[in-house]
Length: 343
Ligand code: DAH
Picture 1 (cartoon, rainbow, N blue to C red):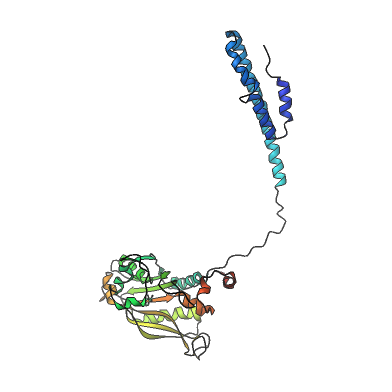
Picture 2 (picture 1 turned 90 degrees about the vertical axis):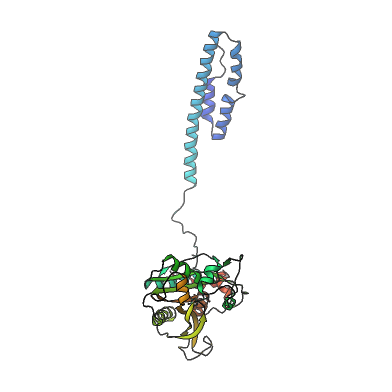
């Protein structure tokens, strides 16, 4: 019977292959569509039945032998290539690495964490609410019905008649009270972004950060509020600080106050930080209005509460002597790198 391929010669060629590409070319040469082996299959039809059996056997064995030789050489070459790669890619771990500087924490995030951690230490829990809020929670449930003139205090981004970007974190008070089904105590801090239609300048931003505080329980008085505010003021601005409350107006608190801290720069003597008054305004607060308690399912004859709202940017600016709010959002590395601190 006619030999199609000299197996010894094929073996020699296969073993001489130096890489997988060469080997693959050989595989195509011997076993591919246009190979002698494949082409000789068409001769089968012309053979007698006996010859066909013998020829079929021969072809099959030949294919098996070739495949075996090719696979074996493929394995060998793969191992050689892998070893070469491992040799070339070794990393010299004794070399010094490139120095890289770690990122710094955001100014606002730092203050939020600090205030929340003080709160958590004295029993507050953290509550959050949506930034796209309903008019109902942002205003009406806070004693600000539609057309109430005090709505002008907060120029608001409306999405439609009912939805808006929350102008304050106070709606989180309402949502939390409602979730308590009229039963205290409630003691929460609510950090979050708020939005107002203000032009950005040194002291205003269309988006800023607030932290709302709310405590509702059976025997809450204004002196509880004063105590907690003094504690926060001292933790933030130094143990020597005192505070004073000035009467003010917020629709959701009665009475309402504005809170000043004694100037940390001059200890109250008067300087340019406190505009010679000795005092610096830090937040708004008050006793929760009975209407707010009532609307959220709390009986104002049984429960009372206090609330406060902190503007985080303001605290950051005072704390670090930042004279323009826009520096806080600029992401300028020269600014940020000044606030590298362990947290
Ligand atoms: N929501 C007020 C504002 O954005 C801040 C505020 C004042 C919150 C007094 C309070 C509060 O909870 O009692 O201007």
